[in-house]
Image 1 (cartoon, rainbow, N blue to C red):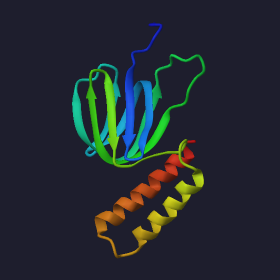
Image 2: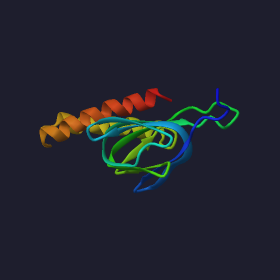
Image 3: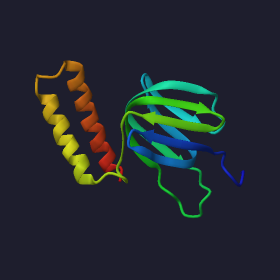
Length: 141
């Protein structure tokens, strides 16, 4: 068994700034057409992101077991090149960096707008899915 797991650099950037910059052993992220898994030395790739939960597993180089980083991603782009995963997210919400009360308020707001018939049907569906994913994000803490 190797003493060190293969790792890569993972950076998540939003309009508000960088919310993750770490060494990782794996990442799972929501592409526009389904989930994509990333491991060290992944082939170069560029794709559009969708709505979903992103999970970053730490590289295991620290003595204390670190939990996975879990984010809600809503749109953007991802690029893998030279053993670096770069996520440019339109929106990324972390249960670690965002207060629980703020996430709960976002869920209420999304459900309210999804229930109204003012927005187009695809937007209401998006809001319902995002509210459900935010609930999953809260439970992951």
